[in-house]
Image 1 (cartoon, rainbow, N blue to C red):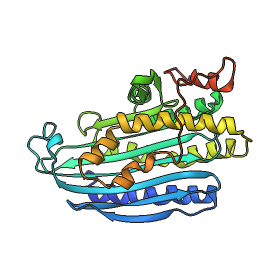
Image 2: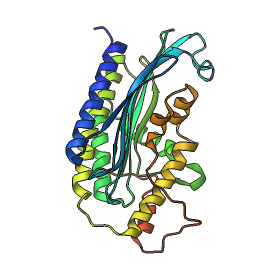
Image 3: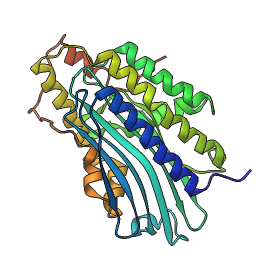
Length: 296
């Protein structure tokens, strides 16, 4: 059996973007606006943005396939390569309602002309007001995907997510975690077919997860104080993306499209000086969720 080639992976990723945007449009009632772009060094993408919807305050679902000479910062990892291809779908959905979780997903594939290639991705959830049963259900969906391939993958990639999405200077995670994996190479982590199938499993579980989270929480009433707390948590999200996120760094260092790279940032965020929620409040309870923990 021949391994999936780059064109097959690119075609599947484009289809994934289509399926996700169609589902969110159905939930929201408003359409995405598409922006097609090209990268001067090679490749391009499709950025889709939804603003001021009924459910979504700001949401971006991006597909990209860029290629060209291997940049200097990647030559240590691929010293024999001269050209690379990188393709993926990345999304962030910022809801209006503070009780609907912010969600992020990314699935990606990278290869060089010396025969090296790897897969990466994951899904993580950032609720301003976490509900334990919903967080446990979310992790259960991800565990089910992982367990179809290897029973060790969920605990491994769950811990990787907890570690990766830690805002070191805040001593807290940016949300309640999920799974994260990177540089999974065929022949080391699993076969090329198995890693591509895992990518497909992670991508395909997004729609049922987001539909569940939206339907469970979108009709909850909220106050301006709760909206302010959501904006404070969005500030933490922005801090992570601008200081630590590898995808943001990779995009900027490879002359990616800035508007698409920074689409993940929230529409509004606030930074309150030395903000400490009062003991016994829902906000103080929320902070207890932003530390690594076992959900089963």
